[in-house]
Image (cartoon, rainbow, N blue to C red):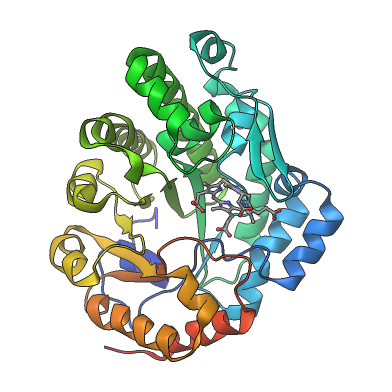
Length: 350
Ligand code: CP3
């Protein structure tokens, strides 16, 4: 792409605003516990973070869904919480509990974090995984790098774990906005460093996951979700003008349109709750949209999955579009249902 030629890979074409011969497909969390071959590598690797920091194993689990299903893109196997780990916060993944972090709750905790400039050195094994993948992936498959958005990463850093309402981070943001803003600024810088290093190692597209964007009321959404992603997008554009960015502001609802326009991202990943007809009218004219089949339809399979997948294809398939889910694949998903969905999307033509 950097030689100025038009992109050849399907996913890059869609993000460049071209209509493709059938939409490209990849699925959030396409590598993971629903695959028996993943569970085997995971059991041998030790902890989840050990797996993230072992380039040969992380490469292997990234490739597993590509071999099995022939997706158009591979997403680096890693996690959004490697950034707080690189900033010196203690992060662990506990079986059945998810991530557990030593909470950063005040200005002193923020001041104790390591410099975001050190992220590139701390996360060297992640970039080694990226460069291995760039060499081992089939030529038609696009390599996606990723990071969490500052707001979502901050919810885990401040709360110390996942929570249904992100109360700890919201209360810090409301009671001490300047303190919280200083954490967001550290995360903007760390995220730019982390994503830049992935591009330098061979990532061709970047996705920014803002899983908890939808819990913020409008003024806070603007300050802590929209503005930081806009800043990240601008800094990356200055360094790598040809690398497209997809953002996933989950639950953004009525703010999605402003978010897409103002952040300047090339792709917007839609959550399950977004109406395809509304998104076709209001979001797709602004760029490439991605989504948004309910991950539980992939668990259920059958006629309902096929009908809703076709509805999404028929709504978005005339313009730049990437087929995906509205959130990540869940562990109870039958692998055969994924195969059936991929075949349905690959056989579909507008
Ligand atoms: O295949 C892929 O999509 C790439 C890998 C990937 C993982 N996490 C691997 C993972 C990606 C892109 C993520 C992003 C991520 N991580 C997000 C944003 C997207 C989303 O799903 O909302 C968030 C919020 C996290 C934080 C996180 N990591 C949580 C809350 C958990 C526990 C929940 C769970 O599913 O267990 C994780 C662990 C995690 N990250 C696993 C995987 C495959 C499961 C851990 C295991 O195998 O033991």
